[in-house]
Length: 116
Image (cartoon, rainbow, N blue to C red; front, side, top):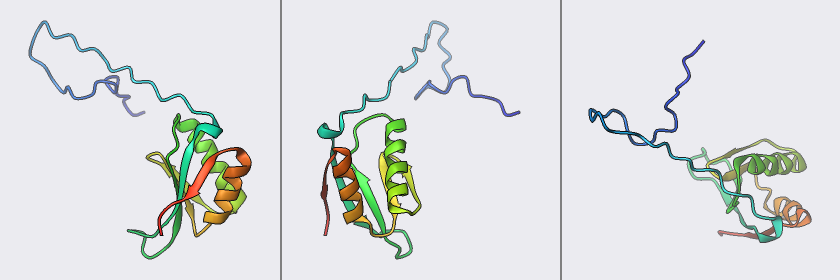
C-alpha cells in the first residue's frame, strides 16, 4: 500500500530548523455553491491545443467541486457525449453550445454564449 501524505495541508513549508516553529495548517474550505439563478455561466467553443477538435466549455461556476461534477455529468448525459470536469471548467466533446444553453436554462442557470 502506498504511503499517505499526512502533511498534505501544509502549503509552502518544506522544512524548518527553528525549534519554536509551529506550523498552522491552512483550513481553506470549498466555496459554498450559489443557487442556479445566481450563477453566471459562460458557454464557449474552444479548439486550442486539442488537435483541431472542438469542445464546448462551460466556465464561471461558483461552488464546490462535487456540485460542478454533478452539473458536468448532467450536461454530458443530455448531450450524449463524453467530457471532463477539471480546474473549474466543464468540457463537453463537440460543438453543443445551443444544447448546453438549453439544458442550463431549463435547470435555472443564467448562461450566455461567449466568444466568436
